[in-house]
Length: 297
Image 1 (tube, rainbow, N blue to C red):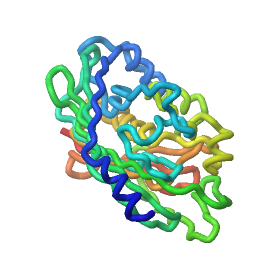
Image 2: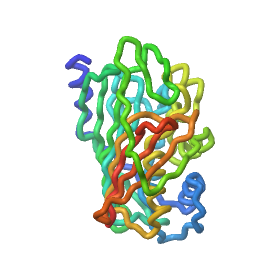
Image 3: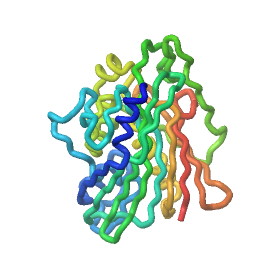
């Protein structure tokens, strides 16, 4: 990527966006059902579990304002990065106080940085966005959101679960997962689960529901499981095993994509300090797909 293009992309640093919403009980109930939870019906005033705020304050782009990948066309709030693949790479969140069912909420977002790197799979552009979610009683969520843009592969093979091998490029390094855990749950990421989560987050990204597009255009072997869905399932595993725990902070990093063509697993291990829980997701072959850490209040 030349310096002129990068300078143009960096002119987006400082750009802001603000979206208002209302935490409807029906949306909370729908996400609980999508996660296969048997929760009681949500009532006004109930605390919203972290990180369920990802269903809130989504940007509702008009149909005519969408790009070919189903996302809003680039060059609005986010910079017009000229690389076709876009992925949620990770994030760091704090939860000073809970958002509550029935209250109004506002997201305030700002582009903090745009950086370019040359990786083993070609050009990479990282965009860092800060989000704040404010509820009826003030700041409730802070989030640093890492977005990565990358090139399409020139050829794909041996890609079912082990990652990608790009023609003329080194294959991505696969990371080993921890050897043992206290908690584990297998997830079957069928296309219905991915569709329901896309609908709840108003996410039009075609890699999650359009099999022809994801395989023929972006070169993946199957539908891609949403990064935030995997992160949500990690915290859901914590809640299933520590139902009374209050989560003060959470950070996660994606290591490799997961697809709907094979089950994956989420794992958890409380640390000895009683305040930290290590969480991770593995693919069907046991390779690390996402690592995370939750801090308890």
